[in-house]
Amino acid sequence: MQRPYLESETGQLKPLTMAKVASVIGVHETTVSRALANKYIDTPRGVFEMKHFFRSGYLCSDGTAMTPDAVKAQIKQLISTEVATNPLTDLDIVEQLKDKGLHLARRTIAKYRDEVGIPASKERKRTATRRTKMVRISESLPVQRHAATSRPVLAQSA
View (cartoon, rainbow, N blue to C red):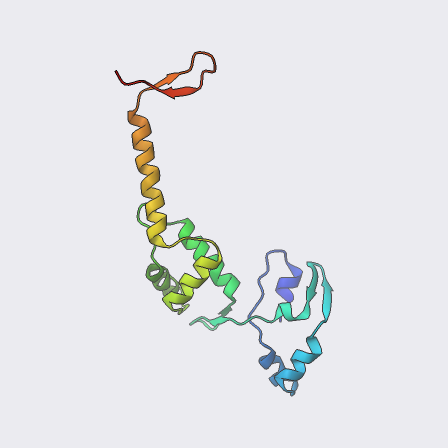
């Protein structure tokens, strides 16, 4: 099930639960959990705890599934292409992901956005606005060079 992840450096883990494995092999979920406890596997990508390969996921409308890490990557990609002065809100991201067949709650998007260190849209807009104002102010101020260091210094007002 996780072969693409193991065989490729860019492969993603697929959603897989212990309950699904338990139903396939005909045992209780706790039996699978106990069997995997404190077990490690050496793979081409490194040594991992066996439980590392079990991830919950989200079902897309086309039948594929995405792990939370894949959803976070989608959120980062959407935000990286936004217009800085008009950033995407969490609801905008929900709608764009819904268009791709992934139905998530706004609070899930907010949680994942926070987990990857991206501020809310209001903060991103505030930061972009401050940068724009700073550029405008710096362009309008006369700049002189220091005689000894040639570094820019603000001109003294007369």
